[in-house]
Length: 239
Image (cartoon, rainbow, N blue to C red; front, top):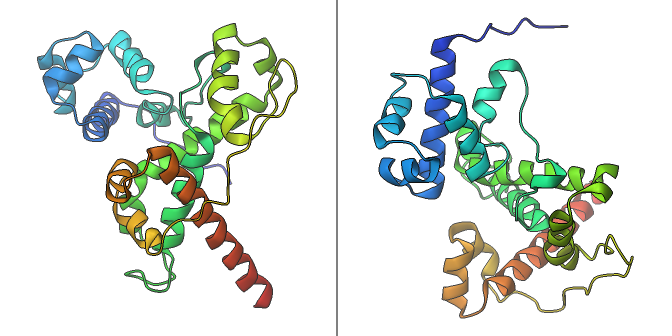
């Protein structure tokens, strides 16, 4: 059944922009002046947008997406019933696999029997991991963009980013020579108690806590999530 969506209004637009500005400042720890510097506007423009007093001009809005990546303007695009996805020429510099397994790890923890609400995932628990869920969505969009035939015709700098950043992580062949990228050593197991610590600390804090590199922490997260996923699969088969 088709449901009629509300027609966008000035009030709804300003509310969406307010949500965008507040989310960017929260996620990137920016005050009004710092965000204004990145967007090329005045601090009063940021304050007015955040308080929904005025409209934000199109150039500043576009700079928001340009500076902070695909998906930043989703609250605005939702007024028209859509959301953003990265183009092959503007793929974000992320580790798609890590972002997806991080979100999966947080979802599994939220649905664990020992969590606050047991097997049920509440809206409050989802709100607590909203940033990770959005990062995972961007990661999926990136993977889809990489899989599209248009990637073969992407600008050279985009293809170089793919080879240097993505292919070595995933083991995906290079776009040019088809050679397999080196695989990450999965034999290095996380230390006891790592799973619980990973639920509470950021990657940087985990690296400092265990005295290892952030790359090592990322590998331990992958290994941990593989173990959790395998355990869930065994439970599903036995059930």
